Image (tube, rainbow, N blue to C red):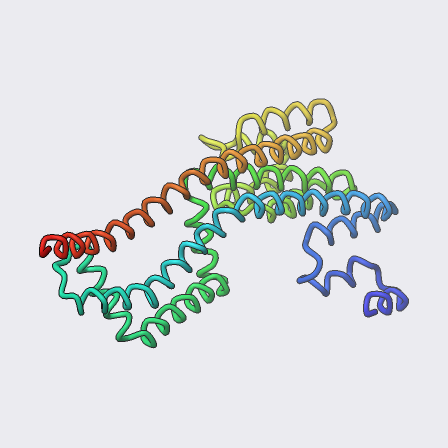
Length: 305
C-alpha cells in the first residue's frame, strides 16, 4: 500500500523500494533502477524473476544435501540425552544393589549415570543453557560471522563455498548487465553476493580496477594468486573479446551450479556410510560396556551351582 501511494505521489519505484532494505536486496534495487532509467522495466523484472528462481534452487540444493546429516546428528544427540537422563541412572542403581564387580569403563559410565540421576534438574538445566547459548551464538551477528568464517575454512566446505560464491557472482553480474546496469555498479552489487572471506576481500578491487581502465579478466588475474579458478578468468576473458560477457557469465553460473549439485551428492553419499559407522560404533560400545557386567553376573550365578 505504501509503495502504491508513494508512486501515485510521483516518486519512482526504485527510491520507494529502497526504504525497505530488509525486503529488497541490492540486486533487486539495482535492476529496478536500471530498468527505470532505460525504459525496460518489463525486461528487468523478467531477468529478476529468473535470478530469484535460480538463487532459490541453489539454496534448496544445499539445504537438501545437509538435511540427512542434520537429522542423523540430531537423533544421536536425542538418544544420548535419553540414555544419560533416564537409562543410565536406573542401570547404575541395579548394578549397585547386586554388588557386581564392574569393568573400569562400565564403572565410569555408571558413576556418571549416578551423578545424572542424583542431579537431574541440574543436568537438564545445563543442557537447556547449552541449547540457548548455541542459539544465541547463531543469532548474534558477530559470533555468527565468526562461526561462519571458521566453518567455511574447513577443507571440503571451503571448496563448496567457493563454487557457490562463483556461481552467485557470475549469475548476479550476468543478470545486472543484461538489465542495463553499468558495469561498475554491477560489480559492486555482485561482490556483495560473495561470502568467503578471501574472495570477498579480493572482490573489493573489481570496480576500482575496471574504472581505471582494466578489463574484468585482468582484474581477476591480478596479484600473485587469484582466488578465482583459472577457468573462470579465461572464460570471462573470452567473453570480453567476443562482446558476450553477460552470456558467458550465465553459462559459468550454470556450470558451477551443476558442479555444486554433483559435489553435494558425492558428499552426501560419503557422509551416509560414515554416519552409520559412527552410530554403529557408539551403539556397539554402549552395548559392550553395559552387557559385560551382566555376563559376569550370570557367570557368577552358574559358578555357585
